[in-house]
Image (cartoon, rainbow, N blue to C red; front, side, top):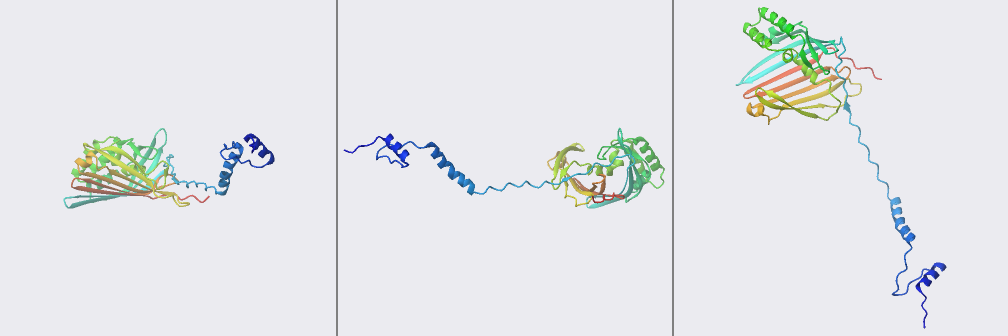
Length: 327
């Protein structure tokens, strides 16, 4: 008769002699060694991790260069001189009328606190194909027109408009070469203006320049867009504007290339009811030394029903600052 040892005794004998006990057929499997099982599970995983190379660390994207232009230098005594050329073409019914003028202006910061005051003087200039405009330009030469300005140089209002208007009208009405009807119409228009409304008449180019000056920090090649509401006669219009710094300035270059555009939203009531369209495109070079415009060109295209008007303004600074020496 064959003797069968108890299972526990077999296991104990196997552990003592280092021989793996084999359970008899039909017998239950011995309990597993927990630590051995854990080691058996962990060791292959650790070996696999050691064998596989670590993924390369993701490289951080290079920083995007940003535009950094100082606001216009508004120190008392700062003077700037610009040559300005304007043209206007109005097409209607197959006919086109063209007017143009050129002028040299000097601007000077005469007060910095508590308000910024800039003085604007037309030094020289003439108008073509517009006798009334030429007479008005002549009457305005040498007249000191002071205006309150924002940090960007944007005119807010003319501070001595009543005095400026009286001087211009007196000269205009005493000019024997000025068309009488045109002089009378001009007097009516100017008399209806206050110091704020007169900004668009007296110093429009200064407002154009200010729109390209004092920009906040802007990533290059990244257009920023904003919308605003304006009035076209009795109709509301939505204007969408974009601005962009075209490219980082080259090393030691002391001007930044800027671009701006404004369009009338075709869905605006003004566009629908007046068959109107408006596009303003501006290209400018702005000094990174003193923040003032060095050169700019603006083209305004306006459609209103059957009439198309194109205005072009070119502004060139006659005394741009020299680039600073390297280092």
